[in-house]
Length: 79
View 1 (cartoon, rainbow, N blue to C red):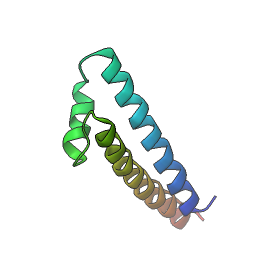
View 2: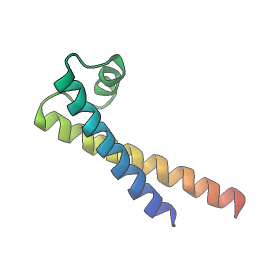
View 3: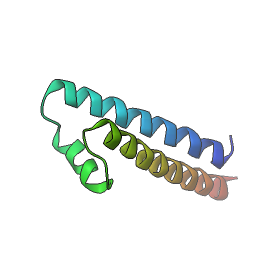
């Protein structure tokens, strides 16, 4: 897999995980401190449908950049 493909995969996985985590925390009661920290870091992310989509966008961008950079560095160092 190329670094671009790994970045896309990591972005999709983190965005999906954040949406599921947020929905589980909302239905279960008060959000955890870790989710509140992510809401503080990702501007516009809150516990509304629009805020969850904004958070998913941030999570995709964060996951893509992280996955791309890490896989690029691993390819560069080891191959």
